[in-house]
Length: 186
Image 1 (tube, rainbow, N blue to C red):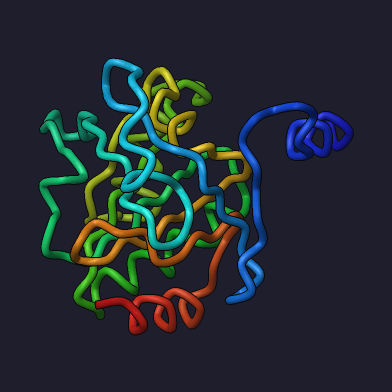
Image 2 (image 1 turned 135 degrees about the vertical axis):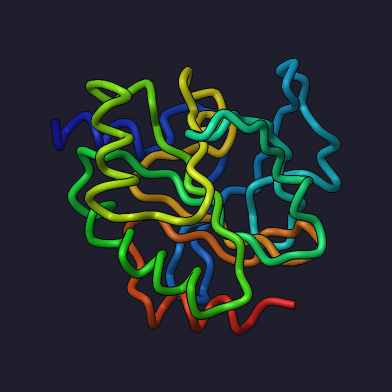
């Protein structure tokens, strides 16, 4: 399993190049995003690297509402990819909730639903175990996780009020790290 993770992480002929940002040592990608039809967005604007426009997406929430990232233009947003079975995700969720409660930030928690045992597990995790109050979106076919090149769980993109990616964390962040990065954003 570790070997596959390393193999999957290393670029073997893939045309998408990962670069390590100096700030925070977090990994970002400068490859483009795709729209809902799988079409590549304008390379000059959309992408996954710092300073690129975050690719828009639309998903249904656990409550049955439809949410788009673009609905949050004008607000700071953390797009967080997670799963119930992921130990680092379980450690990070309380800090995300604390940040949501204490800072002017929206959190779109995208559950990697395709990897879950059941929807009951997700509902118990969200409502009973962690009492999450921010929107939980369901990526039932992992299309958004693929669009955002999620290779580690959890992965968080911090998007400023203009829809521009300001920071990427592959792996769990602490409350202090989240707060520091959110405070840097416009």
